[in-house]
Amino acid sequence: MGVTLDLKRPAPRPDVGAAAPAAPPNLSGMTRGQMQAALVEAGAVAPDKARMRTNQIWRWIHNFGVTNFSRMTDIAKDSRAVLEQSFALGRPEVVERQVSRDGTRKWLIRFAPGVEAETVFIPGVGRAGALCVSSQVGCTLNCTFCHTGTQPLVRNLTAAEIMAQVQIARDDLGEWPSPAGERQLSNIVFMGMGEPLYNLDQVSDAIEIISDNEGTAISRRRITISTSGVVPEIPRAGEITQAMLAISLHATNDTLRDELVPLNRRYPIAELLAAIRAYPGLSNARRVTFEYVMLKGVNDSPAEAKALVALLKGIPAKINLIPFNPWPGSPYACSDWGTIEAFAAIINRAGYASPIRTPRGRDILAACGQLKSESEKVRASERRKVEKAL
Ligand code: SAH
Ligand code: SF4
Image (cartoon, rainbow, N blue to C red; front, side):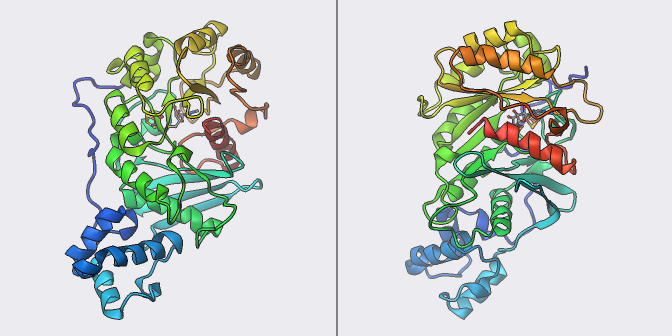
């Protein structure tokens, strides 16, 4: 089983592959503070009016979803001309869009030539519906069960590109201006392509924008970051994002986790659990989600279910058992349904509410992180992955 983590390689850094996309910068990816500074610097607004102008422009972008400066009718024409020259506001191209019968939607977005990632909206999970966003194109890590792990990192996505995923979903859901009452999009999960803690600054800026009271206005406790266990970044992630945490655990001992999640060789389970215990704001109302992919004959024994329960003792936790989604050439199979149920029963008995949902059959347990996968399969897999985390 080809474990390919090269420990001689320097640690991947948050700025890995972060080739700056071509100017002009998109205003959608700027926090209020960044936007204000950028507007003044570009000469688009007078310094003494900067705060007020920022509020106006913010509202147009994040409340009304405008993609054209000419729609900003309360901004003087000459200021709009300067804005136009200095900044972008448009959306990247949606190269593929799929909608399933139950309302799940998937977009394949091309941010630049050869830079494509997937975003999936899943209705009926979280408070109303969750958007699964990507933080990188490809991944530097090589988890052996993950299709994204077979793809090299193309680059980190910028905050604007993360916001574009949210905006494209809102375009498609018809959620402009931000609805005053019930919304379809209520939760955000960083469970698409990539490792969000290796792109934490951009992820954090996007979270600041998404959680702002005006605009998308999804509170930080309805935003979840999923990590494979980048231990040194976990405290900072908690501090600067105050988002909910999900941990891709997948094994209860270091020997197996070293193999499944090679990053474990650098940050073993004990260190990971210590970082999780220190995560700010944990309580029974704000639990960490532990993701555990069910791999036939690899990590799915009753003994491992018991070990999992023992390992998480004392941590306010939710457990999300994810049936493995095979992909072409993948070295694993999904555990049998009975095995998953037996595993879940042990976890249930330990007091964790239904870590899997009612069986839906093998046909719906499929691709994860696979671009252009069959939509029915993606629908089911994304739903399973996300719904247990919320
Ligand atoms: N890099 C981050 C977030 C993206 S992966 C992380 O690893 O947490 C989101 C989740 O999908 C992770 O729990 C990951 O382990 C899981 N996953 C990846 N490939 C999968 C597959 N083929 N079947 C089921 N789950 C998978
Ligand atoms: Fe990267 Fe997450 Fe896939 Fe591991 S599971 S290869 S960290 S995207």
